[in-house]
Length: 257
Image (cartoon, rainbow, N blue to C red; front, side, top):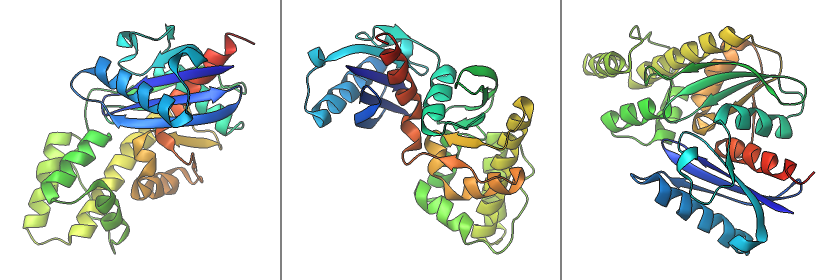
């Protein structure tokens, strides 16, 4: 019984194929200007990787901000619900989930069955999201991975006072022009982002089992700062970007149980 989950996010589109509880393949692609085309491309890629055709898939469930425009999906669910389900499948003891995506950041509480209980969402400002770090990386002329590496090399943390993405960008560039150590400034930026998401987590209540999903789950500097602030070891999937799509595929499987 093969089912699919497809997660159309602001920055990336993800698709997962599962056969019962086993993952067959996954795909991650940039979300272009046309989300419908992105959905078709990522679905075609995940089918190709699994060596199957669309007729072999029994049910497709879409999630993410572009979930309503996936023309071939049988159903759509919110990314909050799907991230809770996917994270619980990977980490059965999880109770708190931090989904750090390209456009927004969400703190999620779930119960022992992976069902959504509560959430707090940062969708008013880019600070604390992947888009913000991409902007800073472009300004500094480095890759996202390099940005994290530079922060990890810091010997001190220079405080970033601005909580707005626009002003924080100006503050970062001004500090570097003043001759401040670049690594220390970037470390301060990561610390400021971690504080923003820490406050989100406090809004839902932080349990001892904390999982991080989304693209920023790959940023080691952010993870380090979050672990310092929560005094917890974060649980992170091997590929944190596909957790929502995995949850969607699991909900699709439920249709046949």
